[in-house]
Image (cartoon, rainbow, N blue to C red):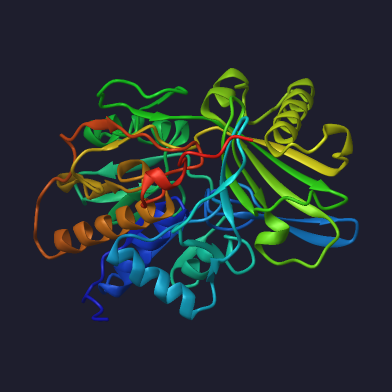
Length: 397
């Protein structure tokens, strides 16, 4: 690493995979005065995070958003190799299936799935150890001073560069009055369950996630499954996935985009009646797709979360990040590349490279005139692999 003389200061708002990778890559490039600011109270990671919940005296692992990730790009492969050397990732060796109603589960072959070693949370925690990370910090305002060419980031001081590594309504509001309309235009957000037309407005879906623990094992021949069902798109057995010795089983159930839209409420305050309804519907759907009698499913623990700004429905065509050269500000995230961990990492790498080139004197805007184009992927997210593997023809029973 060659530390740049008079290394510029960089503030990155958002401590998910894209923000952490961006900061780590900047450090490799000699830009070491980088601070990642994140709102998360528990840990870094954004959607790449886990819940560790004490149930009947034992701590259980739940991956509540990202369930696993795949590798197809050599740039990301280098990152995963590093994470593996630090014992932050492992290969998920258990069977993953695809399930259609009325059909026997079909194992998905040829899918190399990576997970954390103690939940996917170990991935961002490892990356955060490489950077200056400040969690539980809510950023209310950012202001560009054209005279000194620096960004004022709340009460965190002045920075030469600003990176926005999160999306949704918060990012939209944050940049609405920042004086960089080209960047703000790419952060404007629209919510909906279906793919929209070619547009320059980011589209996101909302998903419900159910964490449920059963007192006894369900006895299913797979540890995770992509599901074709009106209400749920994925089910995952965290207990088997992480080889936890327990009589209980802890499952993650992720809804479909349509279910998320049909049951949308303010995620900051979920009415108790809606929470009860969603739990009931998702448990019913779980019983239906697994063919386990609903009456025999006796949850020991349930928790639902509305994942408001879940996965993108469109991505930026032709660029992996966006950057306004005259204002030293850029954005990165999976919504610009591909809704997955790899997409987030590649976007973070791209923004770091752009900032580094800008420091060296290159004054070039990136991605500001590119359009968002629809992308089709499961509600769970995209996986850079053969899409036909996920729902190959199944044998009817």
